[in-house]
Length: 305
Picture 1 (tube, rainbow, N blue to C red):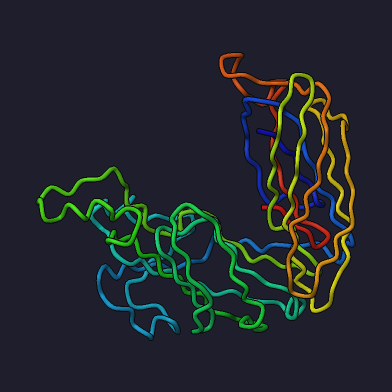
Picture 2: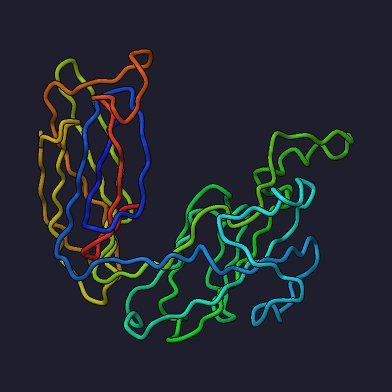
């Protein structure tokens, strides 16, 4: 697997330490034109929480918190304080004050994870759902956010069922011996933010490789989304950088993306004599010469997650 320092600008939005059992280098996609820097607003603080268990949702919750709601900061998982038996539907709400300056831009609510099945409302409108307790998701809220105060409500349902991943063992219910290795981690279990962008976004990068005795061919597929109402031609440059910071390969191409559409162009690079890290050759730490740190920056309308 190929390591990556992936840059598209100035504001760092994530960092992961990564170990690799093959060629290690860094791939840097550069996306132009550069309309404006993508930004984010941290939404981890200021949430209220209440647990409804199996009670039906009250429409009044979309407008105000019920009595007894507690103040929390996310990441938050209610079973940590209430026990694994406290499964049900947890509700979260907060106020987001939107400045006039960002109204009209492309706005997305980004959730790094909600366990297990999530529903999200903004100002009483259901803006999206997501199932999967360990995967991130984005919701376009450009048309529902208004200047000033906005109410965001999230429900997180961690109850297992026949159609859910943790509920598969419920098929044994008739035997009276239902058991599965699953911890109910109900809640907004990772960070939440509002993403602000214009022009174009890099949604993700897929890196594939073919290793030979003295070379490696690395193919970098970059998913580009044009979030503008008109077509754009982007210049996409992919650079391979070795662990010592030296550029070892580069590929450039132009990509035209229609309005409100996406493209996933590939760029192939050939790396001569790639360094390798093998299991048993030592720990993959920040000081290891064949390891790298993968970072993502948000800038110039391009984003890597």
